[in-house]
Length: 495
Image (cartoon, rainbow, N blue to C red; front, side, top):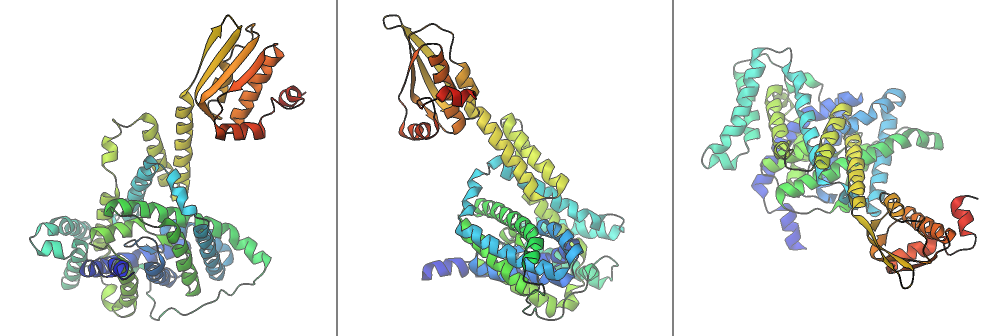
């Protein structure tokens, strides 16, 4: 217990503290921007980011992962806020948390095993593109100073780590933010700053119970939004956990993460914040800056509030160009450049799944739609591929006038038609043996195909014997099959 506590909190103190500070600086403009997207006051996003980051540090299932207000969640809130107001958003946030806790207890985090590597790659590439596209408004219709500052920021980010000793001690994104802010202040450069994004809160968040009627009508209003928020939040959180697992060569507890996200969102809603989830971009910033344990996540949340309430006079002077440089670094680091080279090496189906996931996410700005499209395509390609690995051969015994069909492979909805077409029902034989020793029946479509084959042979006057069914296949055939039941022909043929 003590060793785990040290590993989760005290094994990387300097790296976690510095990384948390960098993440906190990057969280501020995003939290404000996401609040504007959702149509609420900037403090709603800032309070949410503070609360979610602090709570998830203690209850989350993935050390070193950053959770806060996100753009994917904000997009789902727009209509609710516009039609019903902030109080209903807070109520929806509480319900979202409850649904996510329920998902954790139902162990739905394990569903991530159905998301293929090509879908994850497409998801990551799409997110990298969206992160970069989100910076374009800060780089259009601006003076040359912005481009110069952004270029200088990228130079610091990529060249500072090359310096001996100090380059490995201090995270380059933090140096980028500090240096560019100092330059902008010293030379009084007239460029867009964090202060131009919106007014920062000047008080601590307080406990708020949503001022909405506690009745069925309210539930019907917020339930569709809460379900959507819960699904998107868990999906993005599970994807982020997978990516951070790969970056750190560690594992995470996905079911605990589901519960943790739910608890964090309940806390956010009770403190006047919006729903949030894990952030891939900020999590990568944290990892790249040296953050590894829960301390980095806690530092990000606490320092965010300190920055907003105590250092606000300095904070508002940070040039947006510095944060744009950091986010461009994140987008470059997030994108899987190897996936472009692998287009020539990987199977066509894998490439199609990856590209479709990217296109749908970028086109809709909805991560859930892209992942759903990718998972469905991957499932269809897999079913089609496995369906081809089903073979039926036959041999004839003149002495007993018996035709034996040997079935090899997986029989399910994709291969059931091929299974049925492999039999010669018009052949005049007295006996037919269907040997299923090397086959497996998976679903009722496969059972229906077996029923059809047996009944057609019997209708042609042949005696049919089925041998070799394994225990699992026999169970489903006995339960759903009709070929050995009264009036089987009428049931199957619809007479």
